[in-house]
Image 1 (cartoon, one colour):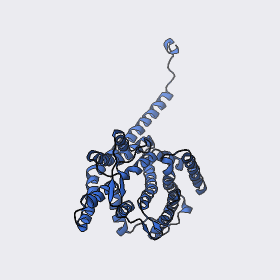
Image 2 (tube, rainbow, N blue to C red):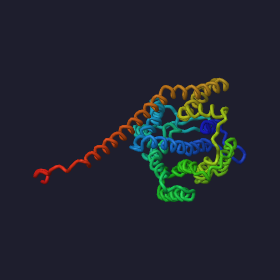
Image 3 (cartoon, helix red, strand yellow):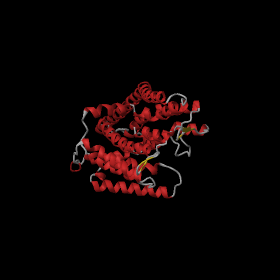
Image 4 (cartoon, helix red, strand yellow):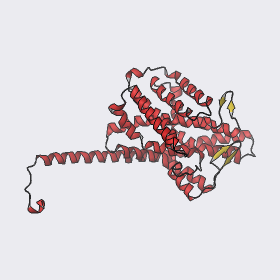
Length: 356
């Protein structure tokens, strides 16, 4: 929701509030919080997958993520390209689109814009390329956290510092935006997952105080608009804070949060269109009418796309992933049984042909 609020602020020209520099920072902050949270949640998902079967964990995980991310992004990006909608950049009272070519469309559909030096033709999809690339590392990081390498807080922080130093070295010799810019933003979610299993670290602060961590991290981020490393610091604070709080169980908060989370991906991909269509394309209508249209589109489009596209294909990908892991585990069991049977048989006579 921070992303939507931030982009509404950009469109309306609401750039600052007291000492806080808003502009496009609110939207970026929402993405950063998502990076930490999604890594934390996906580490828990990997734990459940590994408990069922550790065979082909990486492939099974990527199957799930591809079916989760690509179907809706392909439709959203394809629609922008097909109808030449101005959805690349948002300015005050105006949206701008790119004059894209086939290479731009291909890179955007595959979500590799940062590697191919192409710009997003649908603005919010800039983060999806980094998200998909981070997924390639998560299974390895999960196995690393399960090993003895990361049992203590000191070792966690050492791994984090090593990753940050590596990213700094990459950025020192790179002039393009790449995964090294956001890798330290994902890692705190991994750290939060591991620290959650350390009893002495879990203070179980009442969940009702969790917003104070969000507010504190937000203040740090917005008060340092020119600091290029503020994103890393903000994400690290959130990652270290997550395991300290008890799980939130208040129904009046949990229920609407689950509802928003269910449709959040659709909201993320469609809110640019909802803002543009409601407030710019229909500019001749009264402001009240445009506001109603915005909230209607912003609600209905994510709900419809979730039930028609996201949920069916995500479930389909999960079934493929589960079947793939089961088949791999079955083949391993059969190979083990076969090997055990062969090892109990007497050695077969060796013929001249066999010797040759």
